[in-house]
Length: 92
Image (cartoon, rainbow, N blue to C red; front, side, top):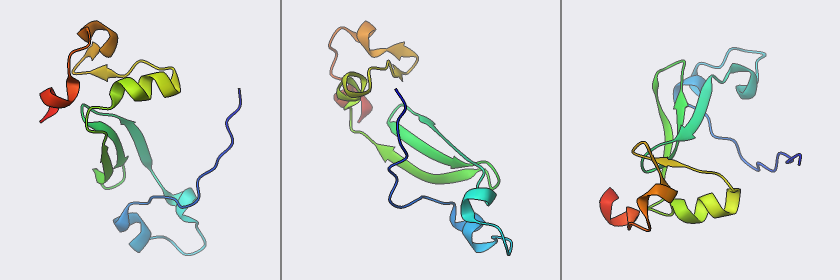
C-alpha cells in the first residue's frame, strides 16, 4: 500500500538552514536520517553529526507496534519477547 506524503511542516537542522546555499532548497541540502532509539524516534543531521530532534514515546512502543504493524527493538530485544514487562518504568 502506497502511503502519501502528508507532512505539513518539515524539520531541518538549524545549522543546515543557516548555511543553505543560494538556489538550493532545504530538502535538496538536507542530509538527515531518522530511526528508532531506546526512548523513541530520533532525527539526526549527518552533515553536522548532531541531533535535530529526539521524540520520547515514554514507553508507548507496544501501541506503536500495533498501529504500524512493526516490531521495534528495545535494548536489542523485541517487545514480544519481554512478556508484557512494563517498558515505561524501565526507561526512567
